[in-house]
Amino acid sequence: MKDSICEFKAVSKDYSNRHGFFATDSYKIKALDRISLSVKQDEILGLVGESGCGKSTLAKIALGLESPTSGQVFFFGHDIAGFDKARMKIFRRQAQMVFQDPFSSLNPKKTVLKILSEPLKIHKLCPRDHYKERVSELLQEVGLSERILNRYPHEFSGGQRQRIGLARALATTPRMIVADEPTSALDVSIQAQIINLLLDLQERHKLSFLFISHDLPVIQFLSHRVAVVYNGQLMELMPKRAFLQSPHRPVTKSPNCHHPYTSLLLSSVPVPDPKVRTKAKKGDHGATLDYKSDRCQDGCAFCPRCDLAIDRCGVERPLLKEIEKNHFIACHIIT
Ligand SMILES: Nc1ncnc2c1ncn2[C@@H]1O[C@H](COP(=O)(O)OP(=O)(O)O)[C@@H](O)[C@H]1O
Ligand SMILES: [Mg+2]
Image (cartoon, rainbow, N blue to C red; front, side, top):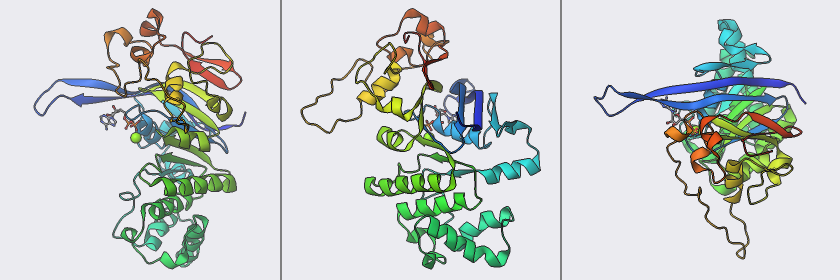
């Protein structure tokens, strides 16, 4: 197995939220609950889960923009919590982010040249009189023409802006890019172009990607390995091959089995055949039940929605088990 670039060790993140405007009562949200996971060199790790399950929180923690409540994040084997200012600056150069919304992530008052020169200046990556040349090179990398150097973000479409965002991330020649739903604000046809560009860049530069999405087909297409998260807990981690073998029913014995939540996700992808009808399932109601319910306080986060849950699931958190080579599932009923 390849070496890891970024490793999360039992990372948890709690947020406390207040009720109402004047209320003093606050309650805790477990955005992440003991996530252990690593992004390997030269791979795209796809992180999939529904809205609110903690994906963006993990992205921010990966880049040191938020600190975990407990647990550690290692970058090339070093705990990022221990980085001093100088080491942090190097880390910021090596680990870059591509944002979801290409409309708000670029400064509207700056030209493309200015936007893309900024990282070169901050990290002193080339002399000032080479900025233009390097920025033109970056634009070419993402399929844009150097003729746009003096134009402003509002003059571009969503897809073009996302390309500029990617060029900005590439400017520092990073080792890892965290892409948080980079295509979900784009039209489907543009999405495909950006996804192909990401694949191309990953191969060309041997980059590592933590690619976050709630869109299963995108994750299936792009990822080398897939991590499935539900309400802050890692349910399953598998190679792409296992993710594509999707029996559209829960199977509890290896091989070819998935976590019941992964099975639910996979069965909800529309099948492009009008003769195939998908039956609604008990847990398949779109909304998440209250995962703070007493029944599941210490157990599996998916327990309230799981058809197959047994009493143990509500009281004891299942550990990740390797059920086939490099395929891990956290579930008491899978054997
Ligand atoms: N700064 C914050 N303060 C309070 N709660 C937050 C904050 N950021 C995220 N959350 C909560 O943490 C949970 C996970 O959020 P997030 O990581 O944004 O999920 P996702 O990206 O998967 O949609 C959600 O319940 C969200 O409301
Ligand atoms: Mg998010």
